Image (cartoon, rainbow, N blue to C red):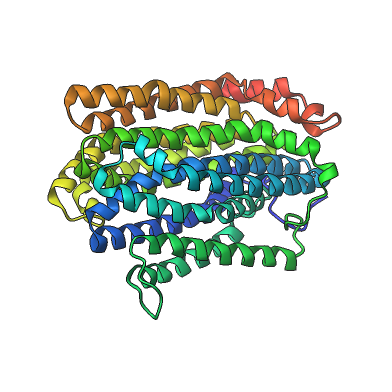
Length: 476
């Protein structure tokens, strides 16, 4: 039965699906990054180095908390894509209901905890004294957006799981445009609005998230979409919520581990003063756009793999992997070349202090060439996650960040007496992450996650997995 919503990714050209499905996601990511860049320009150019440092310090904390919501919505994407690919539409509805309860509940709980512990978190990061108070104020305001941001994460994952990556793009465009306009109005107090300075950027985010979330919900209900949120039937959600937690908790840990690693690494950088913090912040903005194609390609691969594994189409998985490597590798090589050849020009978009720029250039020269390694790791991670083996990618993240990057960052920066030691540790961790992910993908062990979740009679169980996966791995 062909559904009247979403896009069937289990048939047709794999490279075409990768391009047409990932392109709206990439554009959405670019929109978000564009807003982030605009925000950084307002803050860095008009509010000064101190304000940019305050945002830089807050960013990893925000990402760590967001990692919980993003991990749970990764579980939503996996379950939706596998249910959609196998045409289990009753399961799809239960996934939507269960995810709605889980995501909004987490958003509220984490908002309360974040408001309470913000000062302690920033002190633990060794935040410079001259930016501590503005960092606390900014972070507490920004965290109020958590429940609404989590809601958007959930709806985006559900839509993408059914093969629809365009609808989230349209609403994200509206959010970015509205926030971009509202930002300077609240920063500088224009059109009768209060002058809020740095906190104005956080309030602009809150307002836009609320409006866009409401608009998207209304749109889905008007379209009678099966993923339109409704009042859940709690008595039927026990098994679905347990599955969501089983997949989502490791994914949340993975996302949070990555973000928490940023917190710890930022704390190490903070120990070298405001210039190092600002340089790391400006260079990290370049990181955002450099890794964006890889991240979105990984998300697209996860959905394609999920639908095809749900349908029992194992032979297409290797093709997804091959084309993913081609696209992700080619794009990141070009970006790496640009960051190595034109680092100063890129950094001047965000900061004008020549001392900060000099240190930022050293970051791009060391880390920039390794973006391609990051891109390839997201290809294999996408397939592993699409199968539901999120525990494995979590272990890989733990290895890369906590066994390699963080200890090496601490040791090298002390040995070199420079933040450049942190730059080298990031480059090494990219290599370790890629090697571990590729090795696990080629082993084929991730297929067990799909077989364990499929109910009796499902095409995943009825197909011959040994033959399909043996061919797929053997030819890789």
